[in-house]
Structure formats: C-alpha cells, structure tokens
Length: 363
Ligand SMILES: *Cc1c(COP(=O)(O)O)cnc(C)c1O
Image 1 (spheres, protein in one colour):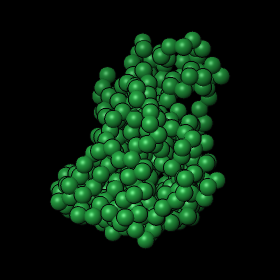
Image 2 (cartoon, helix red, strand yellow; image 1 turned 90 degrees about the vertical axis):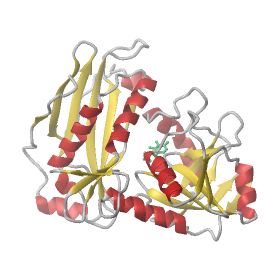
Image 3 (cartoon, helix red, strand yellow; image 1 turned 120 degrees about the vertical axis):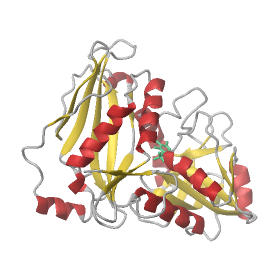
Image 4 (tube, helix red, strand yellow; image 1 turned 30 degrees about the horizontal axis):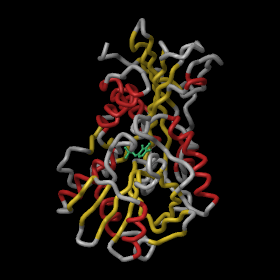
C-alpha cells in the first residue's frame, strides 16, 4: 500500500511555451499555476488509492463535504529550485513529509505515508519542471494539502479524504520587496493556545489569523506578531514565520516549540547553521517588554523572521497600541543576509552542503 504507483496522465492542452515563458518573467506569488496536479484518494475501506498526476483542473465537491463544515484540512509549503546546471532540487522534503503526518494526527486525519508524499511531489515537479522560473530568487512553490471529503454532517473524523499537490511559480514573497519589514504586535488576538492546533499546519490557524493581519495592515505594518494566549506577554511567531533575536556578544534566542508554535523547517535549519557558526542559540521564552527594552538599550542587534516563502527577512520596527520601537537602525541585518545566502545556496545545490539538505532530483 505504501509503494503506491502514480498513474501519469499528461495534460492534453498544456500552456504554450511562449505564454509560459512570458508569465514566468514576473510570476508574483500564488496566482499563477503549473499545468498539472497530484491527487491521491483515501477511504477507511480502501486506504490510499487512485494516485494520479493529471491536468490541473477544478474539483467538484458535494456541499456536505465534511471539510466545508468542520475544517479538517492541513497543508504543507515547500519549493523546487533550479540548480546552477539546470537541474532541479528540493530542500529537506522528508521534513515536510513528517510534519504533514504530525499535522494529520492533530486533526484526526489519516497519516499519508512519507513515500507517497515524496513521490507525489517528485512526480509533479518532474512533469512541470519547465514552470520553475529562471529569474533571480525564482522557485516553484509546492502546495501539498489534504481535506475531508466525506459527504456527512455528523461531527466525527471523516472516512474519506483527498490528498493533492499543486504548484505555483514564485518570484519574491513580500509585495513591497522591502529589505526590512515592520510588524504589528497584536494585543487583541492570539494565534494558538496550549493544547490547541498551533503546531499543526492547518488552514484554520490561518483563517483565524486574518483579522490580526488586517489589524497590522490598518496600522501601516507588513505582518502581525502574536504573543502567547495565556499571558499576552511572550513572543511567539508571525502568522506564517518563526522569529530569531540576535544580541550583543553573538547569542541568539528563538521562542521554544511548546505546542503553540509551528515547527518551521527553516527555523530548524537556522538553529543548526547558527550553532555551526559558533553562536550560542537558546530556545527560550522572550517577552515583548524585554524585546522593547533590549531594542532601546542597544543590546538587541538584529531580529529576523524565517519561513519557506520568504526564507529570511529582517524585522526593522515593531508597533503596537502602546507605541513603537526600532531594532538597530531599522534596516536589514547582516546575519539575516548571511543566513539567507547560505540557505539559498544549499536549496539550489550551489554551495557547500555538509548537511545533505539539498536534494537533487533526476528529472
Ligand atoms: C509554515 C509556517 C512557518 C514556517 O515553516 P517553514 O517550514 O520554515 O516554511 C512558520 N509559522 C507558521 C505559522 C507556518 O504555518
């Protein structure tokens, strides 16, 4: 059952090359899609079955499909890159496969075997590799996701699911392209509480973060930063990125994975890289008050956010109802730039990779 074979049905009407090449010059983020998709069905009776790579097309759902009512849905976010000699690479895809299983477990969904996850991604990338933009910083964003498709309104785990992967060519992530972002510390909303779904990559976490993100935009900020739900004091993460703090003397703090923070693969990679650079990295709770104080007395050198979409982005300024403060001169930091370069090179298999994180695909 785990060595499921994908039936490959190439699109009968793929995008003409000239049209594709024109679109790939400025792909933006999340609006342009490749020609194919992966799809695997699950039912309690049959297990995982009907694995296909097929033309990307709308799917029809019964209005009583369980996901539309009770939000049993999870996703992943990863990228395929062009290597310097026109090959294709992925970054730590096995970590995405394992996190997808952990998210599934939290949402009472079946765990997709790691081999099926990896095969779905590799097959889709192989058939759509011409959709990886050649522009600087370009990549093919891959979105594996799974949802409850059983036609049933009772409240219990669905007995049927669809697992799918779609691919979207991507340029940069932030619309402004700003080198350092401004973030809004919300006192109104929290993202996750102890015992909740904060560590699962589920759509619901994002839905409930949208009013906070809107509050950030309304206050002239790029992104929202959430504090812990219990005390409204400890810094947790952004809506979709983890945070790091660099202090005088080269020590680094990142909030600990206590169940309310999404365990980012970029976060994990950065902890390893920083330790290998000789930094003292502590996974330790850090309060918003301490943050303000350290920024004002100059102990805090740099703050950056990280995630697959934007890799590493400096945080220049923090705003909240109780005022605002800048980090350093409010501009991008050197450590953020160093880490961004190092990770980008490993992702594209174009630098030293002593970790085996960059995975070349033969396609
Ligand atoms: C996906 C995500 C991240 C970043 O994870 P990466 O694996 O580094 O892309 C951080 N926070 C949240 C809430 C996320 O959903």
